[in-house]
Amino acid sequence: MNLRAERARSDARQVTPQQRLLLRLAARHRLRSAVHARGRCFSCSLDLALDAHKRGLAVTLLRWRVVGEDDFVDHWAVRFDDAQALDLSSVQFDPGGRLLQPIGLYPGQFVERREYPASLFLPTYARVALHRRGRLPLSFLSAVCTAMWRHDLGGALRRFALLDAAGVTLRYGARRLVLGIERWRRGLERRERRLRGEPPTGQTML
Image (cartoon, rainbow, N blue to C red; front, side, top):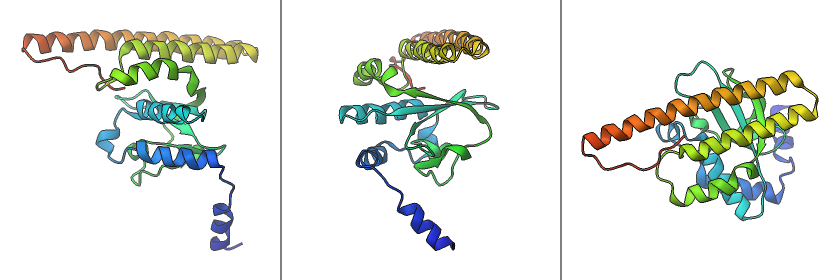
C-alpha cells in the first residue's frame, strides 16, 4: 500500500461526535508559545476537562513523570483515544506544537504514564478556577496529591500488587515533601515582596 492510500485509510478512522467536540474545545485552550506553556500543562488540561464536563463529556487525564529536568516533575495531557493524547502544551517538547500527539512517541524522559479520571479533580478545580490568579494554590495541589494517591493505591490493591502499592505510597510522601518545600518558598517570596512594599501577586500556576 502506498503512502497516499495509507493516509487516506488513517483519515477515514472513525471520529465520534464527542471527539469532534473535544477537538474544538482543545483548540481554544492550546498554548502555542513555549514561554506561555511553561509549567501550565496541568492547569490547561484541567481547563479543557472542565469545559468538556460542562458539555457532558467525561475525560481522562494522562500524567507522565519527567526525569532529568530541574524545573518539572511531571507532564499532563488529555486522552483522545487509545493511541493519541490531546496535548495543549506540546510546544514545550514538539517544535510544531501539534495538538494530537501519539501516546507511544513521547520523549524518553517522560516515564511511568498513569491515567486519572478528570472527575477526581474537577469539583475542587471548578471552585479554584473562579478566583485563580497565576499559579495554582498549594491547597488545591495538596488535594490533587491525595486524590492521586488514593486512586493509584486503590488500583494497586485491587490487583494485589503490593510492591506497586508501596511505591505509590513512597511517591505520595515525596510529593508531600515537595509541596512543603514549595509552601516554604512561596512564603519567603511573599515576605520579600512585603519588605519591598510590593503588592501581593495572588496565587500562582503549576
